[in-house]
Length: 306
Image (cartoon, rainbow, N blue to C red; front, top):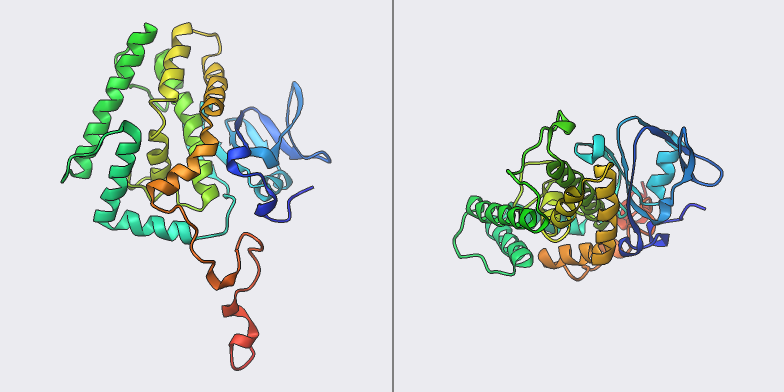
């Protein structure tokens, strides 16, 4: 049975992280949403699923998309192994106050740098020097990430010549770069779902700006050196026959071990200094009934009754 409202759904922290499908069909059956290919049918746990990533060769029915939207499962249409993003579905809230706060912080230079400073401290456990430009902060982060790559390569005995891949030719990249791309795509998908689920905009970033998923990249970067970098290098070192599939499965386990879904939204709220909900506008919660008229639309608020 489909939920009456988003309040009936599990919290993001209690959900399954993601599933990735390609070369198949999603359709609505009597049992629910199912994935169908030449090997058979798989029932999708839509109400308990955070993100569904649809790769090349997938088709989906109108009824299936409707069910996924009503259960709060974010649908992402992506390229092979999730390395390109094409489109997205909806999140699990109709509230906008967090989006308003995000827009305020992102558009004010001083407040933006305060968030950047909190993100840097969260990620590296160090205070940023004062009076740095955003370009200088990006440079400092870039050096830290390059050091993390070099350290992981040394630990796992993987040859590393730098981050290098061609979006138009997936197989041209070396195994460790393909593993990193596949792992980061999974992490970006989960962070994207959390951002939308909590009511934020994926495009209003702080360190990243001007990109459709700028805030998603900001959030994902907080966890890469602890999650996707170790998984990618360890998996590439083993040279499994299905590299990307193995990476995705290990990422899912790493997310579970870290309790990532439980931590994502509270961490975002702390970084944006938004740990308490403001009073409900117009005295009602939009997530209870998004179509319920507010007092501004009720007839008794107008003298002519129209």
